Amino acid sequence: MTEPTLGGLGEHGLIAALRGRFPVTPVVLLGPGDDAAVVAAPDGRVVASTDLLVEGRHFRRDWSSAVEVGRKAAAQNLADIVAMGARPTALLVGLGAPADLPVAWALDLADGLAAECAVVGATVVGGDVVAADRVTVAVTALGDLEGRTPVTRSGAQPGDVVALAGRLGWSAAGLAVLGRGFRSPRVLADAHRVPEPPYAAGTAAALAGATAMIDVSDGLVQDAGHLAAASGVVLSLRTTALEIGAPVAEAAAAFNVDPLGWVLTGGEDHALLATFPSVAAVPDGFAIVGEVLAGEPAVLVDGSAYSGTGGFDHYRG
Amino acid sequence: MTEPTLGGLGEHGLIAALRGRFPVTPVVLLGPGDDAAVVAAPDGRVVASTDLLVEGRHFRRDWSSAVEVGRKAAAQNLADIVAMGARPTALLVGLGAPADLPVAWALDLADGLAAECAVVGATVVGGDVVAADRVTVAVTALGDLEGRTPVTRSGAQPGDVVALAGRLGWSAAGLAVLGRGFRSPRVLADAHRVPEPPYAAGTAAALAGATAMIDVSDGLVQDAGHLAAASGVVLSLRTTALEIGAPVAEAAAAFNVDPLGWVLTGGEDHALLATFPSVAAVPDGFAIVGEVLAGEPAVLVDGSAYSGTGGFDHYRG
Image (tube, rainbow over all chains, first blue to last red; front, side):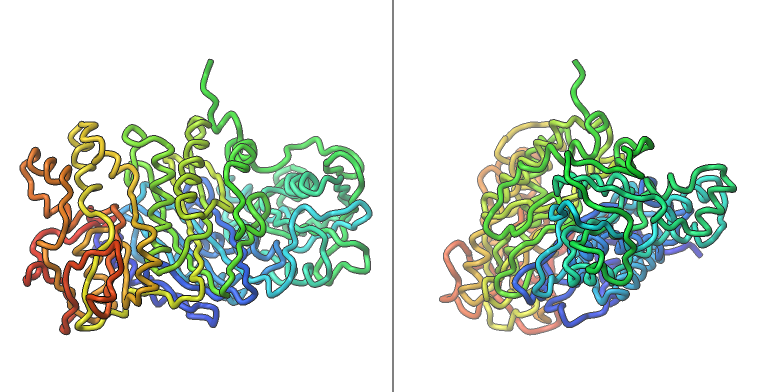
């Protein structure tokens, strides 16, 4: 018995199979199945962000299950919404896939998207399915600011403290593990397959008066640099304040590399880096990792410009 | 002198070059450059739709300029918003592209997106750039219902009249022209490269009390079938009421095919098919092409089930 494929089921058969896999939440005024969805935007604004994931670049089907790819695709977009201090409400998902893709893979992808959305109370409200040589997942996330001012990258002031929520270096360590052909430590491989953004910390930071915030997707030094540039400030980071997870340290020792390299430049953990006007303002869930200084925009690591690679560029790898 | 490529410029260089090519409209509360954009949703709801375009499937770089690909990518998404009776406000665009893609191509794509958005007063508010083997354009469009009830596919009632705005068969005729290696009739090739959705007709239909509406993207018979299925009705179409454009008729004669085949099953013109409670309700810009009957959901063409191919399926071509 051959496994059912998208080519056998057809576009409209797949769409029919996908529909109904996503719960209808109170913000969904009109869900999948029409020309467009209608989503509540109670405070008269909508936060929106989009990301594209391409097989072989952002995930490998032999390393990650479809559920994991779905969770990761959702997580990286939900993290962008959270990094504005907003509550994610809905995703729209475009799927490009070859005709020989098993139907089960597409359905599992949907289940992964739904599962990650459920963590924050969001859901999938619409999408598109097209034929493509490589599996391609295009996700757009929408969010609700609930009356709050968006926390941008550009509000950091000299004198602010820099704080971090979530973990760093885990995905990079997991990539190193998988890249060397290992499947364990499982906890690192899993961290690469599915990030765990500190979703609740985004709203907490906004409510606590964060002056700036960014989703650390490309690496701490690089994303700190984006925040520094947008705010016109220097971000001074202390490596002693950066937690190095035990599995990260152990993998680094096994591979004879400096774990701090992964922590400073590894992408895809989706930690949140934020600035606050005072130490007292920093909410639970954030660790203070540095301070904001006046000066030409730059990132200092232990007082010096960081000399390692600055993080991930999609064209410079 | 070699032409600058995305690989040479890098992801962040390209993003910097793209920023500023999109005007800031009054709905843009926070534009590109942060983790997410913030767009006004004045009536407390946002309409959202997404589409994926893949090189070799939805466009060819040897057939269409980058400006044309950008216009088409925008148009097909804007048409989905308009088909709900909403006003398009913003696009988010994910671009996957190989490292050897000329920078000029990416900038022209942006200009095409901006130009098509400008037709309806929308703009691009955010995006993503990643490396991919094939040029891939993922577009999400947002829209504002301006207080109106969305016009879905599911509200058609027996006794309603069926009306059409916009042209049909032009893109299919243009594809046939280009597919045979011709560049003319130019007006048909252009119609395939850049559709001309009847944007104003969407709002007009909503204001006139349309009971149902759909963007005709996959072919009239197929999309009429979607509307019939969603509404639980029969759509009876009269071919004598369907306009066959003179260039379409001429190309069909030259290729010795029935032009009505293109009109009934050709996709990508993005006409609007709508139902209205009475002949008197049909607004300017719409031509009456049939009526809604009670019965098991179906599409009748001149009183019979249509025996030709039903339109485009991304996996069945």
